[in-house]
Amino acid sequence: MPAILIIDDEETFVKNAARFLAKSGHEVSTALTASAGLELFGATAPDAVILDYRLPDMDGVSLIQRLRTHDQAVPIVMITGHGSIELAVDAMKAGANDLLTKPVALSDLRQRLENLTRRQLDSSRLRYFEAREHDARQQILGESPAIVALRTRIARIAEAQGAHSLPPVLITGETGTGKELVARAFHYDGARCSRPFIELNCAAIPATLLEAELFGHERGAFTDAKERRIGLLEAADGGTLFLDEVAEMDLALQAKLLKVIEDGRFRRIGSVHERQADLRIVAATHQDLEERIGQGAFRADLYFRLRVLQVNVPPLRERAGDALLLAGRFLDEFAHRYRRVSLRFSAQAARAITEHHWPGNVRELRNVVEQAVLLSTDSEIGLQDLCLPARRTTGEATAGTMPTAAREAADGSTLDRLEREALIGALTDAGHNVSQAARTLGISRDTLRYRMEKHRLRQRSPG
Image (cartoon, rainbow, N blue to C red; front, side):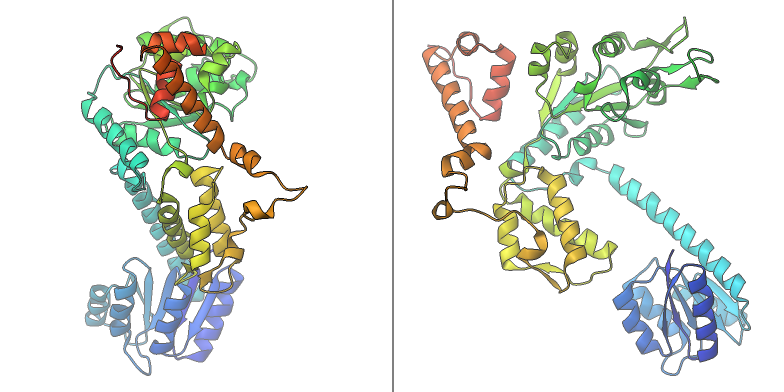
């Protein structure tokens, strides 16, 4: 329930109103003077304010003006024993949302507060989604070369795309890197930004239900199909359908998805009539689809159709300097959400954030910062508040401690170095002929090109 601040010098009214609102589940703070009210307002960040026009140290209109310098949106209700048109006009000009005349019926006061806070919540949600959708590419935060290159790639594709015949996009990257944000950027920075963006997590729905979610069904198509239902393909018509964790889709459904990508046609379950959908498919996965193809779990033709445009989202450990920048953004967000003002990271905590490997990427960082905001008891978040695994140095190795070489292999540094050296060796032996190097390594040409891009290896002319 919303938190309420009452500023009134009439103690009986304050006590009764606070008790009444508290019974409804509200968290209530009270002040008998304007100065005390201003101090509480800064400390508690209430969701709504009730204030009296006549206060010992300031009139209500002046107090509203002071409050509005700190928060332009918080609902304010002014109460007065001397109602007049002039006062009402002054109060509304100052920023009051409502005006009540004493004696005040507490039930009426509660109803007006609930209406105001509900309207404010709806407005905040609308602003949130508008901000999320506007210039979505700018929501991909970071200043590292890897993330700047990602934003540039998205911008080029978004500028090139027209309103029709848009090829699919395949977004790859480790779990927690922000693939959904990239998918939204492709949609909201493109020609279809005003059309629907529909998201489906293929891993979150049982395979038996996934087909109905995608294609819809006719009444009586199967047990419990008591009415006709459109699927997400129809819901996304004209816009974008984002298939997250597409590697989890079963083979039979993959074949049907391929047909939709090829000609835009599909049938609802239980229907004999084909329907046309004009939409763009954006798919994402953290799995190696070529490995899945080798296992017989993913169709090669669907893979090559999905990856007409492919974008790899870099892991946080490859984004030098971005971890601390993102941590600062998350700190501001959660400090505001949990009303923890003036929070900051200690020097030790900032260094730990910079040096941590972040195997869970941005999602892990976000969770760590939220936990730290909730656990910290001081204005400074210390190393102990982050609850990160203790770092081991070479000198700390014991019989029960992982050796340095094993630790390097665990965090991927040795494996990455060995893979890069193998690629360079194969390309050199093949005279920089990519096809021949791929055959030598026993991988496909596309896989080799993906690995070359990962390690920033440029193709040279054979010779």
